[in-house]
Image (tube, rainbow over all chains, first blue to last red; front, side, top):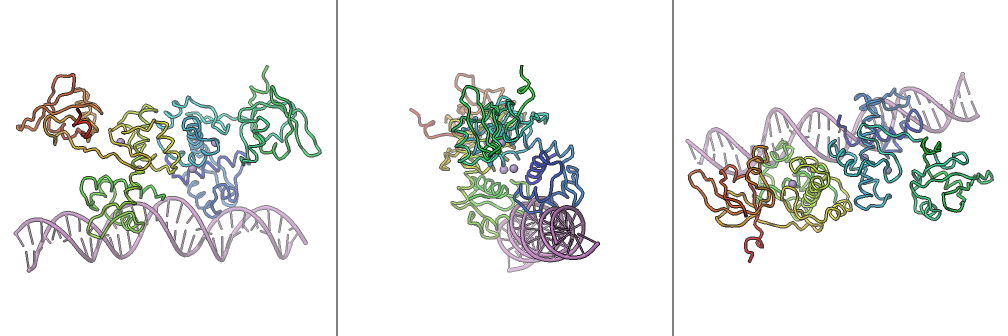
Length: 226
Length: 226
DNA sequence: CTTCAATTTTAGATTTGTCTAAAATTAATT
DNA sequence: AATTAATTTTAGACAAATCTAAAATTGAAG
Ligand SMILES: [Mn+2]
Ligand SMILES: [Mn+2]
Ligand SMILES: [Mn+2]
Ligand SMILES: [Mn+2]
């Protein structure tokens, strides 16, 4: 049940890619891992051999149950370490990804469970992504970008796709942060800009460009609240 | 300035071995790393190539200044992580070595400096070994085993060589822990057993076997105190 | 000073993960 | 349907880290 660093990186990347599309392609995975398609094919054979992957050559691939379990464990570790780095070591949320990319491969199960307890069993990482629990259950919350949302649905900001300083400046200025609750009040088809409303604030307008990069989640419990 | 996991493990092991003897031998290093002499020779060539090592074939080897610096950084990381595991995650001091053996290879300098600050710049790890500071300065304290000590010298328990449950039981029973201050009151040449005295306690006798496995340090400040 | 044993190094293989360049397959266009 | 383009896989190579077995060197004993 212990996989190499490279295998864990592949499993995790496949997991994320197959969330979007059902099947993952060789090129997409190579791009995500900044490696070459030929290298991906090599690895796919090994992962299939180890029965972590459903794969027929030229046909695309996806994780099977075993592979998904392994991937979720890596994601759990990644996100718990990110939380630790931000909440305990005072790193900024934009500084922790690369470090967590290394820490996620530390193998001790006891370590990660104790870290989880030490942190108070956090539910989401510093980017708003849910942290799988110790049984590997990953909270499925619908996540889309703000641009694809209907009017008057209350949602929670859960992430930012492009985290450039310029983008962050816009959000800062409009008092939008992780966890902020907001709803769309009006859409302007002319330029696909939106007017949104944050509680206790005047409405503001966001460009289509910005809206595409703001990721939001809607728990059922949040939208159907009464 | 970044070395592979295997190279870091070699550097660290050489560092520890050359503390005892000036020059390290191929066989000794192979034993310490649980690998083969031929593998050690292979690695020695690479480390010499990278100018971390003084090495002439068949002649033994030792780290040069660069190599020592690299080794000390690994040791710093190892001991800080051990401290974290024990003090923050509630691991026992006998459970943390293997986990730290992995964590010591995480490369981020910022991470280790922040971890150090988060822990309050501890001076020694859970086994009583000194933690190098961020400049790589390693406190040199004379360390020997209790068996090799003169009478009436006050010393501090800094480590236990053989940490078997049986050994720990003896120490527990005699109220000897890390940091305990004690001195030898009498030596019995018949069986090389010792009578020692811990402050506020009646004297107790330790066998030569036990005395050999109790490591103690004597800071100059401690023995010459006035 | 030889001879033998222990230590150390070399020679040659193996495993894992990666790459480039070329071939195979699939998808898209005329 | 035939050609072209894109994608994917194979073939072959390479670097890093390890191993076994054999050769070289050193050191100890006789
Ligand atoms: Mn990673
Ligand atoms: Mn994250
Ligand atoms: Mn290690
Ligand atoms: Mn230690």
